[in-house]
Length: 482
Image (tube, rainbow, N blue to C red):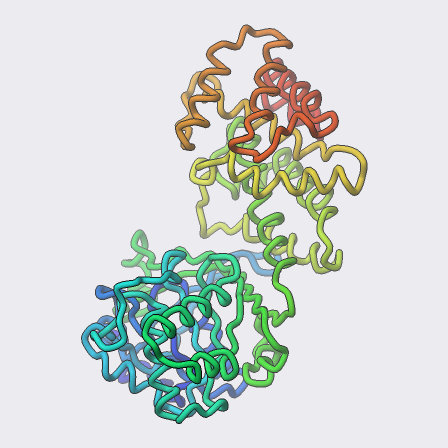
């Protein structure tokens, strides 16, 4: 028995208000779930038309199930492991524009259509000079969108009230601005006229956005148990974590059209998303990177067991609450609330996040995720943050490539691996030898963008912690820093 509207007795239809580029796991567990929640709890009364951005995709499978699918949300909620599932009924239809290009363009003729969202991967917001207006379906997402916007502009004779609120979810910085720039580039290349370019700017709102929810997707490993639990077949089962956050940089008037608060959604409409992006990188990604070498050399394997561990859990807690939060400018209470949610996400028993999978390119990750916290802490407090400095020393030890007798499968750029191989192979076992290693790593400007030996006391502190780790091992060394 397959999931469809005959099986799902609560099936409803709504006016099409949202156009979505992308039918993958993330959007279905994030945007489509939120629209479903707004329909159920806040009277949004709108559905989504989904466009398949690539020639091969899931649209036929989606239509075959009347655009219904089951979403599992699982994680820690209020300190307890929680797992729920629900049939999502927010998509009206799916379109493959490579096969049904005219149907795709005709979507633009709907006066009720108001929002455009997308997640076409980081490479999706790109200009393809081979795209044309009249040669059938464009290859790029911005090319397709430009054609649709031009069709709407002509159909409604340039009516400024028929523009869109456009919110891309691709994980690139300033995504809305970049999408707008490429659309205007197509408008010029295709000679669509100044009136159309003005309509793009005056009638449409391009929002930059930041999205946050871990979505493991289709549960291949447990699909038989899922089928048994559901009592029906669903080829599009999706799995996400409980936590969600959508930061939209745009006018507050968006909340007049999207009943965010009424539906209890964690969507923030802000004038500047920069502090939220910084918050995510520093409080979510930063502790990941700081944790990896310390926890792995301690003998642990996953994020979950590290955060739950008596010693390493305290280390991670102190890094976040005592050091990283002290470098950020958002309200303290809001930062603590976000950090609390991050800890719960790290503890999610349904997601097995291996430390070694996070260790990829740890040197460049430390530069972008942790070094800004280290330097800002020094600037504000006048002293170095002990745990972040310790994690840098642990990272240098990690790149020795050994955990006891076991080899560590290091994964980084070749020049980084060669640097550490050369340094550790020439190490003579002395305190001076460790200082030479620390000094050389901190001086590697190709990675850091500057010579970190210029940061007051950093070389001495990294060398001191490195000496302790070498002398007594990670289990004793981390106690020293705590």
